[in-house]
Length: 624
Image 1 (cartoon, rainbow, N blue to C red):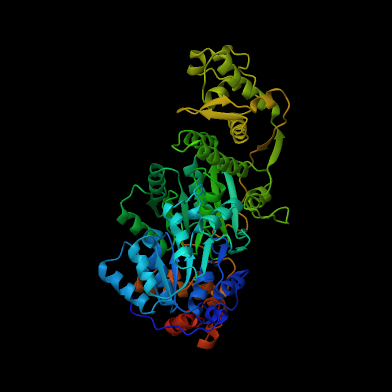
Image 2: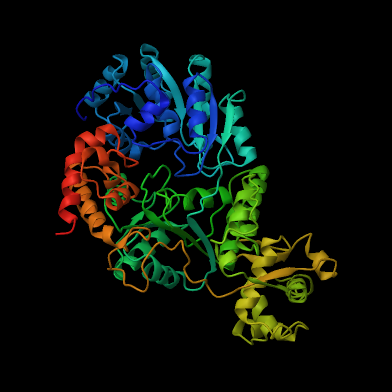
C-alpha cells in the first residue's frame, strides 16, 4: 500500500473543487448534484463519459463526515483509481480479490479508524457478510453506485451482483446513495431506479451529446485495409481502441496492425488474467498504443487521450455502441468514432439472436436492440440526432456538422422495384423450388451470373434470372442489407438463408415505397480527426491542434517530464496531469507558483508535489 495521506481540510464543495481538483467552477449540473448529495439526498445521475461523474460523489465524500463507499465493477482499475486520488491528496483505498491478507487488513483498519475519504469495493465483495460487518463498524458518508446500468437485465454490461444492491437502502437507510451511469434509455433509467430502490431519488440527466466526437459509419470492404488507412491517414501515433466481435478477429487484427508498423495489443476473455492485466496496464501507461479488443475491455477506462474508437463488427445495441465510442476524447479534444458495417454483420447478428439460449422475450428484446442499431447505420439523417433521440434527448439543431451524414450527405433513391425483384427471387426459390439460399445466390441470379451453383440448381431457368443486371453486386448487397434492417426480409438457420417475413407482402404488392440509402465516398477527415495526415504508423502523434506554435516545444517538454515521473511512480501519465492541463500550462508558460496555481487541473496537492518541477520544465523549453 502507499503511505498514509494526511486528512484534507475542505469545508465546502467549491473549496474541495478548487483546492483538491484544481478546477475553478462546476460544469453543467455537477454543482446541483453535489449540493443535493451533501445535503443527504439520493440521486440518479446520467452523464456522458468524460462528463465528470466521479466528482459528483468524490466531492460530497470529502465534505460529509465519514468515508464514501464506491461500488464499482472495475476491479482491474481500482489500483489506478486510488493512485490518482492519492496524487490529489485524497485518502483512498480499495478492497477486492487482488489483495493479500496484510493489504486488506491495513485498508480495513484505516476505514474503521476514519482515515479514508473514499473506499472502493466490488459488488461481489459488498454482498459478503464480512464486508457488511466491516462497514457497520465505520462511518459511511455516502454510497456511490458506479456503472449503475450494470443492474439492467436487458443491458449490455449486466452484472447479477448489482441486483443485490437494493440492500444498501435496507441496511443503511440514513446513508445517501448516488447511482451513476453514462448509458441509459428512459426505460433503463426506470429499471435502475426500481432495482436499486431509488424511486424517490432525484434524477439528473445531462446532455448525451459528445460534440468533439465525429461519428462515421462506412460500408465494409476489406475492413483490415480500411482500418489501416484510417489510422495511417488520420491517427498516426495516436492511442485508440479497435473492437471486434470474436477472439480470433481480435488476435488477427492486433497482429495485422503490428506487422504494418502500428503498435497494437490484444484483449479478450480467452487470454489468461495476467496477460490481460499486463496489456491493459501498458495501454493505460504508454502513448500511441492501439488496443484491439472484444467488448470485455473498456468499461471504466479513464484514459483521456483515446483519439479514436473503431468497430470492425456491428455492435449489438445503440447503448453498447454509445458506451464504447464514448471512450474516445474524454479530454474534449477532437476524436473519431468509426464503424465498418456490411451485410454479413446483419446476417451474423440475426443468427446469433435466433440461436441464443434466452427465452422468446429475450430474443425479442435483442431484436429490438439490433433494429435500433441498424436504423442508426442506415440513417440518411444526422447520426448525432439519431443517437440523442434514442436516449430521449431532442436536439434543436437539424444537423451537427460533425458526422459523416452531415459532412457528406448520402443520396436516397427509390429502391422499391429492386426490392420487389429481390423478394420475388427469394419467393420463387422458396415457394416454387422449396429451396433456401443466402444473399449471394439471390444476387447471382438477379445479375445473371451462371456460376456453378446457379447452373447446378438450374436457377438460370427462373424468370427472375438476369432481371437485376442494372445494379452492381455491391448495390444489391445494400438492398439486401436494408431489407433486413427494415424487417422486410429475414435470415434463418445455421447458414443464414434468406426468408420472407410478414412484411414482405407490403413491398411485393406495391403497398410500400422504399427509399434507400445510396452509398457515397467516405468524407474527408473533418475538424474532429484530431490527427496528422498521410503518415506511416511509426510517426509521432501530431501536437494538439489548438496549441499556439510557440507553445508546442513547451508542451512536448512537459509531456516528457510527465512520462518520466509517471514511470518512476508506476502510474498512468494522466494521473500526474491530463494533456488538457499540460496544454494550458504550455500556453500560459507560468514563471511562478502563483501563476501555475491558476491553471485548471492544478490543485493544491499537485502544486505542492510537482509545481517546481513543472516550472523548471517550462523554463528549460522556453526561448534561449
